[in-house]
Length: 388
Ligand SMILES: [Zn+2]
Ligand SMILES: [Zn+2]
Image (cartoon, rainbow, N blue to C red; front, side, top):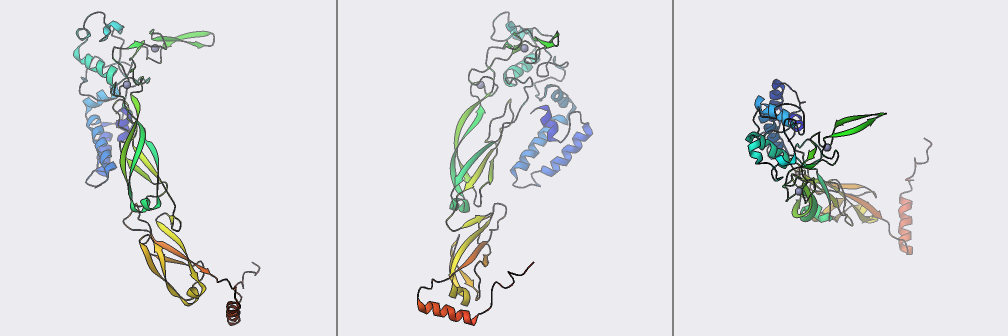
C-alpha cells in the first residue's frame, strides 16, 4: 500500500488533520460495516482496507513512518537512521558509502552487518529485495490490473446457468524473485549515469549537471531478476471452473475478485471479469429479461378465438386468443421470461400473434372470402389518407 492508497482509501489528501482522519474513518466504517452489508463481499473488502488504513493513519507514530516511506512496517523504528531528507524511495543514502563492496554478496571489505546497524539492515533489505525493482524510484505497493475475459455461452446455458472451464493468461508474482523484480547479489551501476549519480542536461548553450533521474543520484540500481527483468511478474495461463449464474446476457460482467494480474511490491491483485456473449435461439428472442416469440394463428382462430399452445422456456403453455384478435397483437405471459440477475423474479414472455391468411387456390375458398367481404364492407384504411 502506498501513501496515496491509505489517504485515498479514507477519501483524504496527505496532510489531513488527525480529526479529519478519525471522522472519515468513522463515516466510511459505518457505511461499509459487514453487519450493515450482509453478503456483500466488496463492502467487506472495503471495510478491511479502511480499517487497515486507519490502523496506520490513526496512530501518529505509524503515520509518521508511513508518510516518510510510503508504507508502514513495524520493522522501521520511528527515529531510524533514515529519518530525514529526500532520496531514493524516501531514503537518504547520502550519509552512506554505497560502493558495491558494502553490499552483501558483492565481496570486498568485511561484513556489511557490522558496518550498519541492524535497523538499517532491515530497511535496507526491505528496500533492495521487496520494495525495489520497478524503474520508479518509489517502491510502493501497486495493485494489479483487472483482466477481461470474453466467454461465449449458449442460449440455454444463459437461462439455466452453467459451469464453464476457462483458461486465462494473467500475470502473477515471479517465482524466482517472489514478485520483487530484483536479483540477488547487490545493486548494479545505473546505466543512465554509468554509476556517477549525475547526468548532464543541455540548456541552450549551457550544460547543467543534475541528479540522475533514473537512480535518484545514487549511481546504482537494484539488480534485476534473471527471470522477469525488473517486472516482478510473469505471464501464466490459469485454468479454472467458473459458475455462470442463470440470467446472464450478452455483456454481463461476472467479477472474480483477486483473479486478475498480480500487484507489485505486495499490492493486491486485480480482478478478473468474465464478459458473457450469449448465443441466439431460433424462436425465442431474448431482450433483457423478457422473451419474445412470434406465433402464427389461422384467420379462423384469430376471428373466433381459440386456445392455442405456445412454446415457452418452461415447455409448452396454453394461451387463450380472444375472438377478434388482430395480427401483431401481443400477449404477455407474466413471469415466463428469463431469470433476472438482479432480482429473484423472472421477466415476461411476450407472444406476438401473426394471422396467416389461407391461400385461396380453390373456388370454394374464394367464394367464402367474397361472402365475408360482403358482410364486412368497411374500409380498414379509412383515415390513413386524410391530410394531416
Ligand atoms: Zn523475477
Ligand atoms: Zn543514475
